[in-house]
Length: 260
Image 1: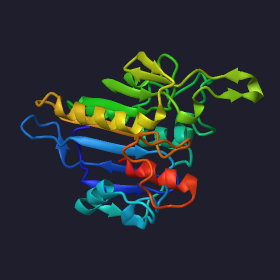
Image 2 (image 1 turned 180 degrees about the horizontal axis):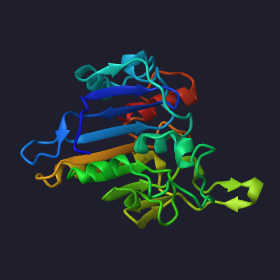
Image 3 (image 1 turned 90 degrees about the vertical axis):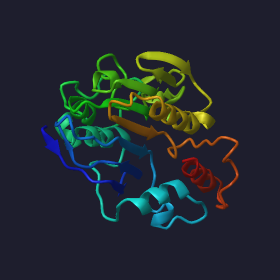
Image 4 (image 1 turned 30 degrees about the horizontal axis):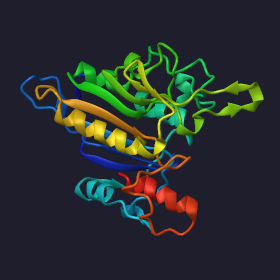
């Protein structure tokens, strides 16, 4: 990849319901050209109208609205699938989920498969261009050895391997009890079954820390994959109770978005 052209974008991914925000522009392999830093925010189960600039009511998303205002806002966009694993595979590989064998369902805690390390991911392409690469948040492309982020082009990983609703969940159909949701720093489990009220805060603080403490000589790519507002919904004390929505689940949903 000698050159790839990408402009500053803020686009709404409809079916899966997340907002992807990238800051990309002319990148080339020429050493005398400064390459832009890239951040992609990937929010789980977010609907099209759940952001202020797309007509959200009952809660506010000022930070996302500001990004949309200062960038480019797309109003027509399609994703490759409506659920987690296939959509994430498509985003990172640029392929239809069926082409990478991840189209049938999501990966569960009892699953043993994942994204084939032979697939070329966005992180691997950017590493070739001299980028420091990291993922903060939810992976959900395989949690067995060989399938984790550090095997797929990411220099660092801080987050969880699959969905937050899979925390200590019992699967009756195959008599499988999943463990407390593991929390990773790279390949090391540094916590289990953490208080999910603070997941969004932890991801945000980690992302800010990485940006502030980065190697100033290298451009960076950070893939921020928030668990919220995927159910079960949680929010820290600083945000809980702020949304105007009266229906409990919708109020909590709004809080999950406002946390960003």
